[in-house]
Every structure is written in structure tokens, then in C-alpha cells.
Image 1 (spheres, rainbow, N blue to C red):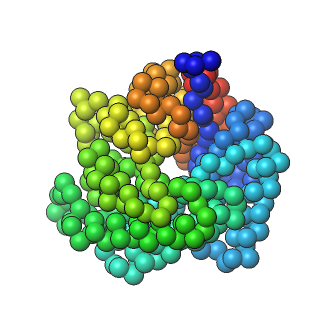
Image 2 (tube, one colour):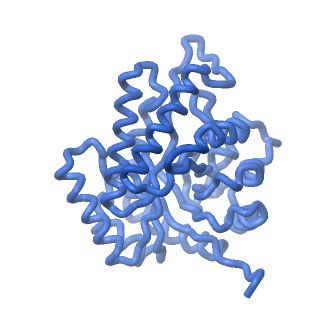
Length: 304
């Protein structure tokens, strides 16, 4: 029926699996049976694209096989925390930037073999200054280098048969982009990429008050002004003071019902939303599963 409200696609990023449920034989039953979800975003914390090809090929085949057998769609793959800790495509050493570009190229190869059509994540960070001050913009040479690498990566992704690449904006002046205007400029500057670059905003990033202030509108300006280039979203529970990545059993400022209303109001709602949570390695696995089961049920209900 025309005008009927459609459910918002909801899935989970496999960040919760790090050092725990590290193979598809382990995480697929949890996603499908325990959390009652059929949509995931893979994390490269579970597979290092720089492993030898014979290992990567075996893991890609297993991922494709187990996801299909479990009725799980793997929408995309994100770089994960391990690679994010490096400065990647904005490291001060050009050779490190080259290595990070090759890392992403190999991530594209793995994704293609595993049947994952999209890859993304934050792209890099410039180093801090000795006095601790931070600029409002990247140096022009750094930005131009980043855009050139994004074009090359678009060509590499096209060669692998991928359909989309993602940039995840982060709330840090040393990374790019961290404002709506910067994100728009970046999307304009890579508009002719052989594979389209799109945005995946995170609820804990756009709401970061120490950077943006308490009255900046939180996620609404991101969704409203960039709706044409946003095709996925990360959701987390947070307090707007740090990028918490809590589950929704923890008290915070993100309400799933209000989130769903915002996604629909701004036209983002057809895009999938992925829960992205992280836990200390010493956190017991049983309580994590209980929390994610409750969280998934709560968000599924809000997004229905």
C-alpha cells in the first residue's frame, strides 16, 4: 500500500566478536538464532587482509558459505579497530600511506571473494602537534593526497567488482571529514570515482558535544544535509561526551524510538542501520550475549 511505513533495515557490526566469536561458524548462529537478525556488517578485526592469499581465500569461502547457509546477508565490511589505530592514509610517512592503500586494496579483494559488495571505514589521521593544538582543516597537500588515493581505491574496487565504498566521519579534527561541510566537499571531490564513495555516519560521532557543542543539532544536520550520500548508519548508546559504543542495556542519550523517527523524517530510513558496540577484552562473554540479545530486541521493535 502506498504510504505504508516500512521497517528500517537493522543489523549488527561484528565488532562484538573480536577475540571471541572469530569465525563465521561461531558468529553466524549467534546473529541468526540468538539475536534474531539476518543482516551483518563484517569487521576486519576478524580477518587481516595482509594474511597470505591461501589463508584469506579459505576464510572468504567459509564466510560466504556460512552466511548463505544461515540466511544472513553480509551488507558490507568495515576496517575495524585494529587498523583504525594506525594513521592509515594520512600518516606523515608516505610509505605508510602506500601500505595503508594496499591494505585497503587487499580488503577489497577479500570482500569480493566473500561475496561482500561494500567496504569502508575511517580513512586516516594526521599526527598531533607538539603543542597539542589542533587545526580546523587538513593541510591542502594532505587533503589532495587523500582524494587522489580515494580515486585510485575506487578504481581498485571496481576491478574487484565492488559496488560501493564508505567513509565514516569521525569527531576528531585530525581526521577527515568531521563536519557536514567537509563531508559534502569530500563527496563532491570523489563524485567521479569508478565505484561510488558514500557516507556511513555514526550516532556517537555526530553527537560528540566536546567538539560540536551542546546545541549543534546532533545527528539531524548530518542526515538532513547529506541524505543523498548516506547509505548506511551506525547506531550505539552513548552519552554525547565520548564515543562510547555501548549497547542499549546501558543508560544513555540515544532513544531507539526517537532514532527511528529521525531516520524516517530525514529520508535516511531506507538505508540499513548497524549496531556497533565494543567491549573490554576481559568482559565475560555470557553477559555480552545477554546484553546484545536484549539490545537487538529493543531496536528491532523500535525500527519495525
